[in-house]
Image (tube, rainbow over all chains, first blue to last red; front, side, top):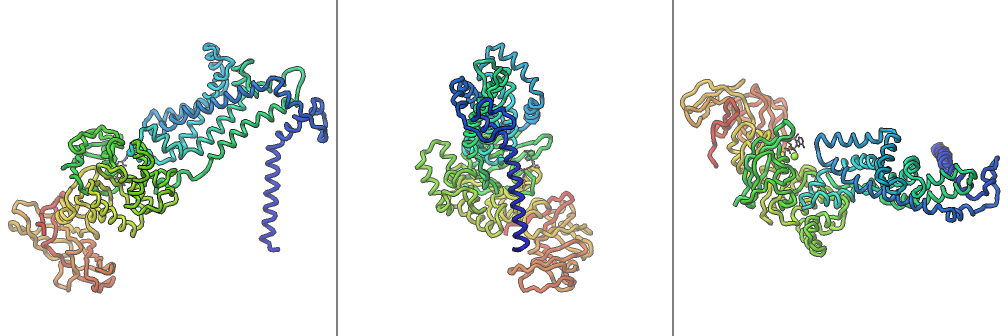
Length: 276
Length: 362
Ligand SMILES: Nc1ncnc2c1ncn2[C@@H]1O[C@H](COP(=O)(O)OP(=O)(O)OP(=O)(O)O)[C@@H](O)[C@H]1O
Ligand SMILES: [Mg+2]
């Protein structure tokens, strides 16, 4: 065997080992959750952990019987509302920021991002007072709007970077072809920016889906999201670990589905061939 | 009939005025070439005609109608960008027919028109490809096709050939000229390449630093450049320009001298004309001559054999001089030679670089 081939075996072994460590590090908590969700209450907390046991799926049926369906619905409503609002507001804003010039634009993009520099609590209290004032506390829309204050600047920031990379000649060609600004955005810019739109959508959805603090403070009973519902369970006298684990596992499904669909739009090379 | 008229157009970016009062008219069906060095404002003027940029002052007319404030989409202009600016996610056919789609033309009619135009530009086979799957020359033709499809009032070209290789450039140049004859629409073509300007233009508008320096037919500008800038900008290789001083003057006849040379006798248009400060002679009016017959002696630096002619570069006391010689002329670097001028075709310039003498049309 040549030295070269030997070296490549060690190389691929090393790579496999490295990847296994990385993957198990990432997946271990999920595996732990999955195992925990099919144990009994006492079995789940046994020390040392049991690896051989009779799987018990009752925790999953209890998701339905103990009223978690409502939380899933709320979480989904909030996440999707937030994705839609972020896109509808963020895309035109980012487009305007990249295509219109002047001092205002420069400063505006800085101030937009500065929202993210403030500690979250600086945002929560005014939001709480505001939503209480207009009677939106404990509604999905309140949580979605609160999330929007954080995801919108981030989305604009990401989109601005991407829109800047699209040659302005394309806009002008479309304007000469008789397009209005909105048509330029719709016909030319958005199709080219599809991968970035999908990425932004994924990040915003996952953020909203998992966000805890804002959802916890702005809701009490009717609009509890999944993370809040799970957390509130942990505080009650009977610590129902299998149910918590089952809810957590199931809560991954919508996010996985959303990412799976959105990810298909993340393809490279959409902008190739435009210029030169 | 006047197709496009600019009236004292001015434009500044911040504190810098880049277009300093440009006026100009293009006749219906005329092929006008804007030429000038990089950064002189050619693209800016073109973009103002297209409506992509607003002039600070001045007016733009299409025919008799004031178009200064009309948005670009309403100007019915076909523009070919230097970068092509094709829509990367659309097929060739869709790229060419976006304007029709926006105008509400039904799909089958759009396809028909795309096929028509594609045939004209030899793109028939490529209608369903994406721009990324095309060569530079093909992309260029798609960009032209997109401009043609809507039957525009005028075409604007912004250095459309600058991304092509030399052979393709010559070919496309001919194609654009042919296209112009075929559809006979007003075309305004921007380039910094004097060869393109000389070969394609009905009329050249020569710009420098945001101002029109001179306009006219290619031959007018070549034969009677208004000043040193025009004289040296047009023509390849460049006109030889030498500093001179008048040693004696007798009415319209002046004896000029230059570094390292015997006297040259030139004729001025009138006794009142200022003394020439420099003399310009084109390479084709410059000769390598037997000793004693020339004006200057020099050393050959290099000889470029182009097949149809030889360009002889010499170093003289008055500066570098290029002479265009017949193809069988034998020259070797380092040879000492004599340079002679056809003085009757010389251009004379005053201290400000303005042309003193005129040459009748031949
Ligand atoms: N958007 C802009 N902002 C500021 N300055 C600009 C802008 N566009 C052009 N300029 C300036 O205006 C001048 C003219 O530019 P323009 O693009 O018209 O030149 P050009 O003649 O087309 O040159 P080239 O042959 O290099 O394309 C240049 O000095 C350029 O720097
Ligand atoms: Mg230019």
